[in-house]
Amino acid sequence: MAQPNSRRPRRLSRITLCVVLLVLGCQATLSVRPTAAAGFGSEAIQGLGSYFLTLPYGGIKMAVAVLGTVAGGMGVTFTGGEKVTSEKIWSPALGGEYVVTPAHLRGEKDLHFFGNTPAK
Image (cartoon, rainbow, N blue to C red):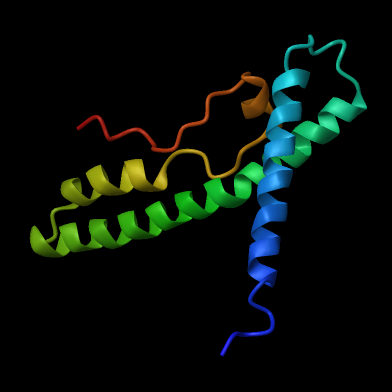
């Protein structure tokens, strides 16, 4: 027996995909203009683009951070309390950027998914 609301998730997914593609398409054309010539409209689009890109990116980054935390804890446990092993796991997994900003979209700042490993 089919559920009466089975079409709703599909519609929401399609709308979300269309909005993300629209924002990305507009962002590619607006980023060609110099920053001084860009007006409030382009800043608003960049803000919306960073918001809608942060939703999936931030979710994936949080999942990697949680899995890295668990793996680092297991590393401490299995090495008999050696913290060097856990730091090599925790630094890349927990470091990096969690939010996409308009500066990332303009190319002014690099977006790092993983953090730097310790120098030891």
